[in-house]
Length: 84
Picture (cartoon, rainbow, N blue to C red):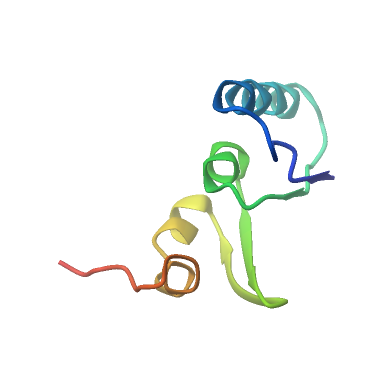
């Protein structure tokens, strides 16, 4: 379990940390539980994402589904995903 593993890191160090964790995941036979607010880190590592808002699960699934989820965008970005 990693809790905000890149908090307070400079961008270059954050990138190196993401690479290191990614290499460990590729080589290891284990799962990783990651709590993180930095979406670049989350989408760089996760194969499954669960999004909470005040303790309530509002979305869970593949990163690409979470990224386009209207409820997630509304809660975290303040607006729904625009439709074309």
